[in-house]
Structures are given as C-alpha cells and as structure tokens.
Length: 445
Image (cartoon, rainbow, N blue to C red):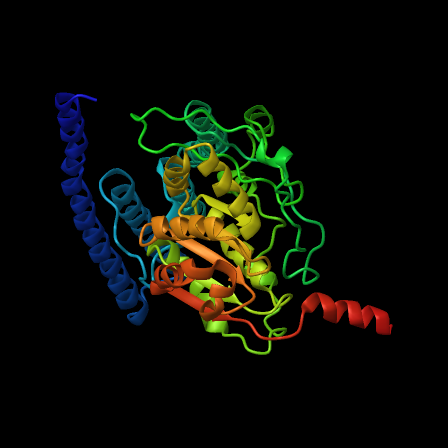
C-alpha cells in the first residue's frame, strides 16, 4: 500500500473522534434524567405524606420512575457500548465492575440490546396507559398497542437476523483470508464430574499425519497470516479447508462457532468442577480467573498437579468461557503443538505460523510433562512462549512444577519458564486421581 493511501486511511479513521462529543452530550442527557427521576420521586413523597396520592397515582408515579431508569440504562448502554465500538476502547481491564457484555460488544450485539431495551420501555408506557385506562382514549390504547407490537416484531426480526448476518460475515472473512474454520463437533462423551480431566489421547506423529495439507502462504500485504487448524485430539489429523467449510452451520451462534473451532477434547464448564475433590484448592483464584481479566491483560495461567486432579477440566472451562466472551481460542496437547510447530519449521513457515497464532488471544497447551522433548522441539516451544510473551495469553497444564521443567525441555527450560511465569497465575492442584477414585469405588461395589 502506498504512503498517500495509508495516510488517507489513517486520516479517515481518525475522524471517528468526531463522535466523541456526541457521547459526552448523551452523558449530559443522562444527567437530565437523573434530575427528572429525583424530581418525580420528591413529588411522589410529598403527595404521599400529605395524603393526596391514591393507589392509581402511586402506581403511575412508580412506573414513571421505572421508565426513567430504563431510559437511563439505555443511555449508558449506548454511551459505553457505542463509544467502545465506534470510537476507542475503554481500558477497564481488572476493574471489578466491568460489565460482562462489554468484553464482546459489537454493532450487532449493541443493536439487539438497544432493541430489547426499547421494547421494555414501550412495555412500561403501555402499562401506564392501561393502569390509567379511565383517562386514556380507546384511540390512544389502540395505537399504543399497535406501536408496542411493532417494536416487539422489529426486535425479534433484528435478533433473528443479527446471528446469521454475523456468521455470514465471519464465513466470508474466513473464506477470503482464514485458513481454518470450525471443525466437526467433538463434544466429548461423559458429563458432570465423570471426567474432570480429558482422557489422554496421544497425538500421532506418523508420516501420514505430518503430511497434512498446509495452507498457501499469505501475501505480505496481509497483516497476519492464518494458521492451519489444530489437529483433532481424537483423530490426530487435520481437517481440510473443504471439510471445515462444509461443517459450518449458519444457525450457530458466534460463541458456538468459536468453541467448535477451538478443538476442545470435550466441553467442560467451570461450574461443573468438583471443588471438593482436590485436597488443596483456592476457590478465590478460580473465581478471579473466571472473569477472564488475565486474557485482556495478556497474562498466563499454569495449572500444576498430578494426573486426574482437574487441570484439563479447568483449562477447557476457561477456554469455553473465553469463547463465549468473544475470544478466539485454540486447544491442543503439548504433543500436538510439537507436531504442528515441527511441521511449520520443516515447511519453512515457522515465523508465519507464530504470527498467525496472534489472531488467537488464548492458546491452551495441555499435558506438558508426560513426554520429554528433544532439544529441537524444546527450542520450538521456547519460540512459541517467547513470541507470545506480553503479547497474548497461554494456559498450560502439567504434572510437575516449573522448577522441574528441565526434565522436559532440557536447556531451553530456564529461559522458557522465565517468560512464561513472569506474568502468570500459578495454580497448584493436590489430590488423588478423580478417575482412579471412581474406578476404585466401582471395583469395591
């Protein structure tokens, strides 16, 4: 791209700041509604104290207060969500009161939320008319009902269209630039507390697996090349582009698409984790991690403990929640990551592969320590950790503390651990294997 074109693009993009005064104007409008709320409240209190308020008046006055609050909620949604979406990001990372919806707000989400808020406001207005029906004409009631139904229909249509439209945009974007798409569903069997850690499945490093098709290199004008799909843990094979495209479901939500694309071995929720099973477990740490502040802050999480204590369950649970919050996630075992990076290096595209992974704010590396790696593979892991240092987040699960990683990665371990642990939450899980406990119980019965 030529310098004049780049300068013009930046200049046009900078015009978004012209919207900033509009949002501050809405802040002033919100102040007006605050004044109106307390004015109505004061009048209600005075009339109640002086005995001038009957039941109908009190109900109507309360509905007016609710109406004002709902409009104020609509305003704050437009102010915060609109500013974040169209002007500039609001740095609330780590703020305890950060709204849940702010982490994945976009124009479609904002439109649906505004539509539903308008329906709620319209409902209050219509209720006011029916409460004061003796002083409301039939003409006003009729048109009030018609307008309210029109709002409901509009909101329903908008909500229905926003999902397929967003998915169509994602599909088109992936079709033109992304080298991967959601894989076939693989929600592992079992549920509840029956499998807090995924059943280990060794990733095949055979020549057939290593000959999986690789994407064409992306031209240098594209900011970030797109990665090859992570191989499925169950099969140890890549999905071809046509297979991934055919697995696309236009009626899936964006979160479901991201969860499928993450290639989790099974679907786990943080709420399903048996907190009473590990002998030593900090529930406050889990609650803090569940807010996903570590993803926004580009920090890491390391789960350390013996097999069967719930490390993979927690990693997958955080990954699923990150997908639901709008983040792209990739899951694979350490053996799978080793095969992927080895293949990229053999094809001469390791740098492109590492850059492509930047599109995913969270990568999960499971089962570190079950198999030691040779020096070349250990160096590849070091490059992965070093590339993502202070850039994106990693979740790592392993059976031994970081101080013993030299048993796995040899001489590359100190430099790797230094970068991984610098901005990391280290979570230790102590206890017996959950799977062995269930097997023992079944045998005893």
